[in-house]
Image (cartoon, rainbow, N blue to C red; front, top):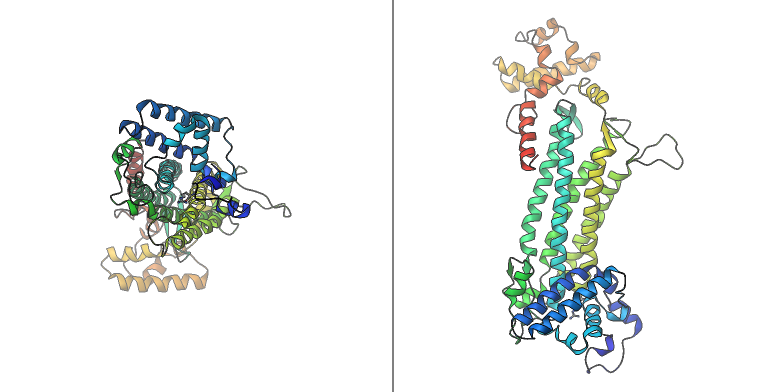
Length: 460
Ligand code: ARG
């Protein structure tokens, strides 16, 4: 099917540069499997509804499967003049079946066809992405299981705040990713609605059965309104917002790894499997993986803006602008998937937590100051008063180059007579962490509960 044979209305061929400009075959070939699946369902339905004979529908289905095989053997090679994947398949079908091939497009338009293909494609990719996210959660969980008793400074404002179980820190990301997966599952409901049979925009006079094709293709429902069916790309925008949040989460973890791998933090060392060297500085080991993940957010956020802009102000129903949705969506899916995969590998074999420097870090600061105040609270001192007292102790320690544990009992008691010998045990980092037993806190028993929750969730 060349572009000058759409119908007899056209006498002249397209300007070759316009032909290239107009064509989407260079990228929408990505939809080939879905185009074939959709066409097979359509042909079957036409056969079952008696629009074409049963035998004709079988022949069409077989020929479409042959095209699938030709493609897998590298023998299906569309040309620019085919314009898009839909025309390319139809042209090949007609080459194979002659005039019978020309019956496939009965009661269908490329407008509902492209909407169908992209939904089928995205549904498959979303299911795969969900599995990948689960795989990453499981890797983080197994790292967390190994790190219950490793302590890491917890920060607010990137200032040392209170020590944490490293498992607690890692499980925060498992929970974020769980929300991402829930959002994916919810967005999937809006992807999983069939537009097929809306035809060009108004439906068709051909006695088709839209619910039959929807069922054959495992859709939950069909669009009620044919105009909405062919002009809706909300689901693409919605998926991209979900992907953008996934990227936000990955970039936050990436940033932490980048900081942790620096000389200044030294909380992790990067293994040779996932780090690169510098072409000039022989001592360097660079965290390229998390840096790339952080950088690739730009693509996904950009595509979100792009898709919203494509949709804005478009009149009903199909507009060629929609053709621009594909490269954006393809890149969002590929980028997000790549990043989840790279982060999974990074946490599986690309980094090791340095328990030596982590334990040095949690024993060389004032992140136990809140616990001194809490200690006084248990003796009946009002919190705000205790807070003031401990603030003055910290100030004194800083002036004298001491840590809280270096104070003598006399010095403690000068501050408040309530201090007893047990203050020393109470401010050990392990005790500080263990004491945070409120639900969802970093106390070891609470973190163990979290670990068990996730192990159950993943059937481990
Ligand atoms: N290649 C087109 C797209 O991606 C397919 C639908 C074309 N429909 C049309 N009426 N020109 O949107």
